[in-house]
Image (cartoon, rainbow, N blue to C red; front, top):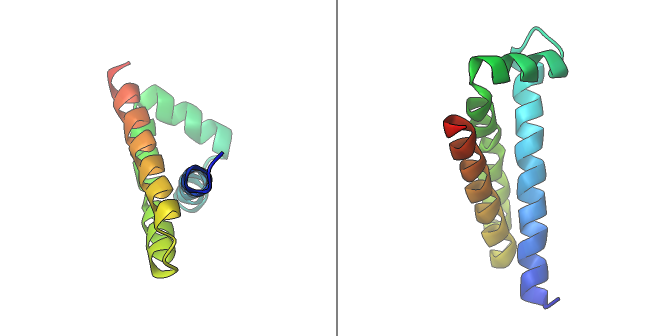
Amino acid sequence: MGTLKKEVFIGLIIGLLANIAGCYLYIYIFSTHNLEETIQNALAQDVLGNIIALGAILNLFVFFIFIKKNQIYRARGVVFATVVSALIILISKFY
């Protein structure tokens, strides 16, 4: 694997982990139920996409950290992770 592909892949993984961490933080701070109950309720009420979108806010911070450190390819991976999250939201809204 080339170094550019490796850097983009690292950014993608970090972006996805930041999104998961953001979702968990949102649920931990604003939900009165535990994680499993909240996800089940979100699926039943069709608001899981909203939780994923709010979790993606952490990608913004990670993106700017990579830009500040001049790690452009990792920042591209974070953008790609955000696009993947948007596709997941889009699919969850229609199916």
